[in-house]
Length: 83
Image (cartoon, helix red, strand yellow):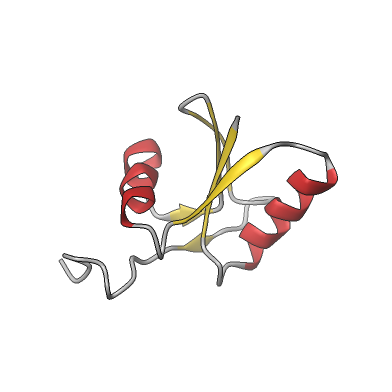
C-alpha cells in the first residue's frame, strides 16, 4: 500500500491526494506536522522535510508535485520541536 506523507497546510499534498483518489489508488496519509512518528519517518526516508512524499514498500517513489513542495515543520506541541 502507498503511504502519503504531507501537511494539511501544503497545497501540493492536497494535489497529490486528489490525484491518488482520482486514480483509485489505496493509500494511508500521514500529516507530518501533527504526527511526530510520521515526521521522524519522513526524515529517515528522505533526509529532508519536503512534502508531499509518496512511499511504496519503504521506497520513496515521489517527492513533491511537478517539482514543487512545501517544507514541513514539526508542531510546536511535539516534544523537542524546537531543537
